[in-house]
Each structure stands twice: as C-alpha cells, then as structure tokens.
Image 1 (cartoon, rainbow, N blue to C red):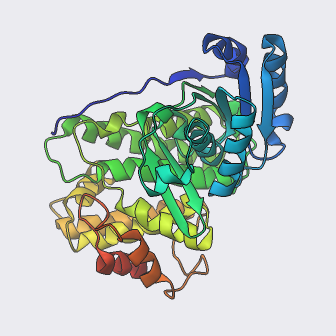
Image 2: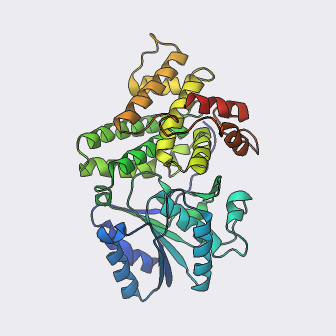
Image 3: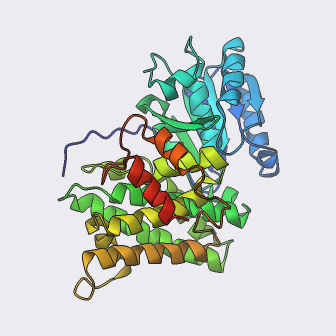
Length: 386
C-alpha cells in the first residue's frame, strides 16, 4: 500500500425527488448568475427544466443556457460558452445530463476566469488561478464525472483530459428515475464505462492494498448483479439506483486510496473515440478485453486475481496467464450480454490509423502504470482488439 491524499467535497443528494433540493443548493452557494449546460430537450420532458426555471425565478438569478452539448464534447462549444459566460458575468455553471455535459461545464468553469484559451488547460496543463463552481443534475449512470476531479474535451483528433480538485462539482443531484427511460444502448454503454473505471483502478501493480482490492471486487460484483437485473427488467428502479451510485463510487477517487490505477486502456480508447467518434463506453468494452488478453502474456497477476475472486476461476486448475485470459473471455461474454460490440471490426474500424493513434498517444512517453505501453505495445493491443 502506498501513501495517499484523498479529498472530495461534492455534496450528494440522491433519490426520488432529489431535484427539489436545487433551489436550496443554489441559495447555499450564493449564486447570482447561472449558466445551464445540457444536451437536447430531454430535460424538459423529464421535468428538470421547469425545476431549474422555478429556482432561477424564485431566487432572481441572471440566467443563460445552452442545449448544444454532444457526445465527445468539443472545445469549440466550450470556447463559445466561455465567451458568453464572461459577458454575462456568470458565477456558477450547472450541468444536466451525463459526462459530456458535466465535462463541458467543468471546462467552462476553468475558462471563464482565465485570460487565455481554455484549451491551454488540456494541452499545456496550465494550473488555474480561479475556477467557477459547478453543480450537476445527473441523468445517466456512466462517467462518474458528477463527483470526479477530471474533465475530457476533444479538439479535432485530440481528446485530452485535465484534472484538478477545484473542478469537482459542489453538488451532484442524482434521481435514478431519470435513467429509467434512457435508450438501452445508452444504459449498456454506461454500465461498460462504470465497469472499466473500476477495472482501471483494480489493475494496479501495488501489492498489499487489500482494503481497496476487496472494495473494488465488491463493487464489480454489485455491478454485474444489477446489470443482469436490468437486462431482465430495464425498469427495475432499484437496480438503476445501485448502478447510478456505483458510477459515482467508481470514479470519485476513493477507490484510488493506497494504489496506483492504470488508465492505459482509457488512453487507447480516447484515441479511438477522437479518431472515429465512437461511444466511449462501447469503445472501452472493446479495449479492456484486448488489454486483459495482452496482459495475460505480459503481466497476468492482477487480471488473474480478479478472475479468481470475482468469477471463481480456480488457481489450482489454471495458471496465472490462463486465468487472466479467461477474465478476458468473461468480460467479452458480459459486454455481449448487454448488446455491445466487442471488437474494432464490429465497429467498422481497421488497422489503417493504428500507427497515427499510437504516436499521438505516446508523444510524451509510455501510457499506463500497471505495465506502461509504448508505441509498439499500444499497436499490439489495438491489433488484439480487431
């Protein structure tokens, strides 16, 4: 176990009617000028928009909004909204939706007080002097961005992340009822995203991390159980509640305590979604299988441990390499049960851009911490994903 610091100030308001706390929360944070960021008219059909407008009117807030967010959010929209935020002296950004809306809001919160280009944070790692506060009404169970310190933004073929504790949302409102009528594909891709956030943290080369080992294994078991319940009954509100809470648990950094998470798989998928605009969760399903299969022949101990503890693969009957390989098979079977694609070929992707993506991802050195991936290894995993 290694030393760590843990900090997460996000206030969680979870459950039926959680959205009705919004006005009190905005009042608590002294909001005067609110920018609302979301994606499409679904927030009106869910009744969220009217809750927001009532709070704005009751509190007499200045108000601006944008419903233009798209998956794999682009820096151009962020730049546009940063400009509007400056003009309207916005002092709080509220995101409604999933990871794309939340990450857009976080980027705006970085950009409004900043004199330069907001892309500087993602490309150059500039440290902000000031960040606007962000709040979230989450309507999906996927990215966990509602309680994380990270944001991912695209700029052409570049998809880069930025981390800073100051972009952790001040509050996250989570009503599982909002997730019930999501298209199944979106639900399935979200479950894949949650699972891979857990796996990235589990695949650590740090030993003697029993507490977080067992916490992650338990979270994986809970996710598999409730995903199966949703496959049988997509309207199971209790299963949806479990998965929405797991999305936050998987990515609020608590499970990082005492270990060094990998994140190599995410760097591979970020290149794929930047290059081909695929859905992140489905892309992660493809990549994590290939990564596990690759590690079976390179460093199998962590995947083998998970195969034994979660799937009961007997260590007396199978070697570490065999158990790791079986884990890859088990993951493929699970993702297919969700109706997700599990290979690049199924996604219509061939090997023509592998070298370009590998060079771009490793321009500053190898990626991943469990077993660092240089350009050659990056391409080998992509080939396994075909």
